[in-house]
Amino acid sequence: MCGIVGIVSQTPVNQAIYDALTVLQHRGQDAAGIVTIDDENRFRLRKANGLVSDVFQQVHMLRLAGNTGIGHVRYPTAGSSSVSEAQPFYVNSPYGLTLVHNGNLTNSVELKEKLFNLARRHVNTNSDSELLLNILAYHLDQPQKYALTPQDIFNAVKQTHEDIRGAYACIAMIIDHGMVAFRDPHGIRPLVLGKREENGKTEYMVASESVALDVVGFEFMRDVAPGEAIFITFDGELYAEQCADNPVLTPCIFEYVYFARPDSCIDGVSVYAARVHMGQRLGEKIAREWQDMDIDVVIPVPETSNDIALRIANVLNKPYRQGFVKNRYVGRTFIMPGQAQRVSSVRRKLNTIASEFKGKNVLLVDDSIVRGTTSEQIVEMARAAGAKKVYFASAAPEIRYPNVYGIDMPTRSELIAYERNTDEIAKLIGVDKLVFQDLADLTGSVQQENPSIKAFDCSVFTGCYVTGDITEDYLDNIAEQRNDAAKKKREKDSSNLEIHNER
Image (cartoon, rainbow, N blue to C red; front, top):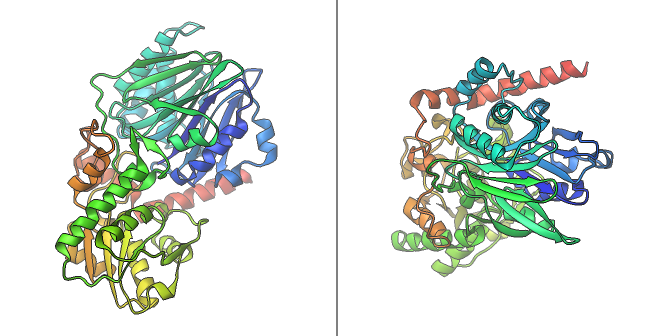
């Protein structure tokens, strides 16, 4: 999961992109980057590891001159956390091209070989985003002419769609031409388009979530359709074309469960409303199946599950209380590379209000259970605060399979629900009773807001991958790349390389 933004304006965009990235920070906390095009047609780039507020100081903002730019917050799913793999990436040929990408390509090995054999293009990192940039660059270069037409650009996107597989929402800038944004044929990762009027001219913005439009004063126009490409000239002319064969909207269900902000609207769905519906349906399931449970209070694990838990409390006619206080300055724990770091971060991230637990039978509500590390720690904290019994409700079904489309969920063996039933999971995380949302209720909660969405990527629950190209060999390969031991080695290698470079 990454956050991306692009703006074509009549005035400097550095501050607007910075502000947009700050509200997309939840999508990636590993690195951040902005690139603009100045009056002399030069890219102005700043990227580094860290949060947006740490990466960009006043001196960097002053250097990011230009009325058009793109930005990125990174959450690594492939490659390493090295600053060399922070985005945006750029290449000098053709024209000068820079790109940001949210998602994950599933045929990276094949693409790397094709790039070298067909185009003699060298990729310097393990990032699939650099691969994607070079594939697009290769196809943009094929007309072999100085001035590209909108149709030339759409043809290049069509050919890129044919080459790459997986999940991708992308924004690129082409020197002397404009900005192009496109989305994979399944629409797995989100991308929205907005506009505003300034001095009689229309300015455009593309971003991962609608909340980024809101914060900088752009009006939401629509979602970029699956397979669609949007081309915006630097003069503010907008062109759009469907560039994929047989596109079918199949968004990632986890956007609504966990990743997206509640004040965003994605593919016609209010994330907040979808989560309220999740709480309604899960509350009804608990009421049906736990009639003998003596629940005194409903407490959310902040913050994604707050709205879900409130609705559950209403359905059960039980008090809703905030029993945990969250430190907002600790990153999302399941993203972190090592088990010890995750455990430590849970303790730093949450603290209990003991009076809400002492002597009570508590129903804890969370959006999901991935490794179980966080859940186990939270249950221990509830018991230490004096809870008599601890029940647990997950707003998502059991996560039994890894995600291959841009969410760094662990290998199957590291998922607590893999090859385990509900009672076994409950015992491992230390709860008296555990309930999971049914998948039909989860998808139905989102479809209540937009019935036109007929299917979702639910691969983490079902093991069915919508791109149809995921094999056991591929899953075994990503298991080797994603397990904690491999991550620890990559982090060490990246650290040593950057120390060497500094010397």
